[in-house]
Length: 483
Image (tube, rainbow, N blue to C red):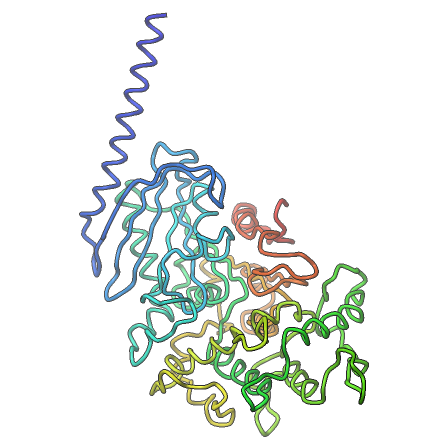
């Protein structure tokens, strides 16, 4: 018995020594010299079991800066942690105009969040994309600041990857075997841009609802939608009540078109609802749509066109997305500003043009004839919609792209068109080896809100699907959680 007790005590002492050594290795990273940057802090965060991601291992949290202004956070599972480091890196993007380091991990979802990777033993990394913002709707940091625009556009992804690689090697003594990237919305744009800018950076990529063409989407299309809904007297034609009325009629006519009644439209292009029964009649006190509201809705469905009738951005606001309009499109209550208007105003004021008009710019002043061409330089800095991903395919890269058919913010037709263009550009066989596309009925932008179908990001598990694809070589048939 005494011998056993002595052995147990020695084992505990050894474990304590190992833990102490690990702690010291972590905190010593504070003094690590980085090319083009520096480490600002390094500390051990204890294991936890009650957070939004369940059990997380103890990890070394490192904060660093890549010059001139990119803030980076890297989380390294401690050597004695359970699960231990799996030898891989899981890097994430950020949403909107970013600017808040690690914001996504406070929400409990997987989009743009490090938590799901850390829970599986990945070393994880993210950044603020190169600036501090008051919110993800704030783009004032970009005013007359082309370096910050480049950082947000593409450089923050590669610099975060570089810094994470240095810290992983310093902490574990070897590099990561595999590097993955996951992002949604702006994070999805980052993912696609990374595949183009440095095709060997990531072995696997998850790009959700990718806002791959910011000038086309947030500039031209969102400004066009704002203008279409402007009643000219400080009010909007379509409000939250109208969204509910239209949504109910749409589901009644379009839900079962795909053969399944599930409170979702299987493919918006498969159904053109007839809403004439909703038109207001003289003397009626029933909920209805005025001529002006129907005209605004028709423009929303069609999407932006110039005077010559040319489509300026593919697809309009999709049929079946109405349940999500109060947040994004109409405002949840009378007088509330919808997010589509805030995104358009901030982007056009500070990020879109060679000379920034600045605070006070109103998207209602956007000139659909002249202004799209003025955003060419911005497109070159930000966009990830080039379908020529041949180099990524040749490097053995694998990319899961997912998008909700009911996304009214980053409307889904652009993603479908990009996928078709990839097949035309590199060949359908190469595309099937490199890209797995998943269009999900009833899903809001990034799965943020639960609509009539009840599906959200919680129902998806693209990380498991990507892991299986890299292991077996077989693209995933589904992203459903639990499969």
